[in-house]
Length: 275
Image: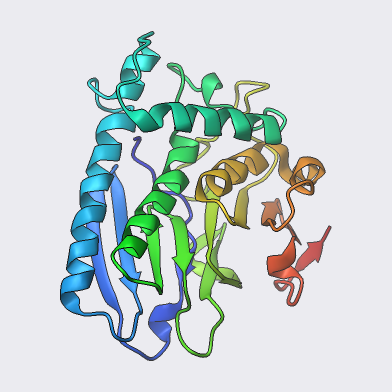
């Protein structure tokens, strides 16, 4: 995977009372972290889950990194045909699905150097690792894969899910909006930390549709890809986004913020308008 640092949504659960188990790993050129809020979770259960997650993180890096010449994706970029990891075909299929749903606004085949699924793999990996944590018996946690969050269970008895802050495009240390994420994924793409790294597949230049886009929905891979697609399409992406029931988006274009979907139905962020 490529080194990435997007303007990341952040769990605000650390501001709530209660014990939290936290684990972190440096991988993919970023930091992946696990915050567990199960009230009765023993330390050894968290450790066991985290060891399994760490192993999967490094396996994913070995398969999907575009910085490693020996990775499967690097070999595909050089014209190789053999998919030696069972899930590569799955990722390719998910990329095709995302390209279709976004009407080409997300297209990893248009990346410089050839196929690069990095705009989908982080969210896909977050969901895979969340499934591993669940298999270890933990129920209330967030898995943050370099800014792509998989949220499971609830942060506290007073919350249905997890309060997540969406960073401000002009200042990643400031929170522009807060949403409650319930058993879902949230991903943000923007220019504030990495510059104009999102390319428009149509023009080949930097995306001009939005300055920042955040997507909330039931699937981490698609959340990641849709956020990238909305950077290209901007608010015009509502045309294809509205065909996805249960999904929400928060798009910043210049000084205008637009939000739509069920995550924003009860309370609109200050300064935002709904489509």
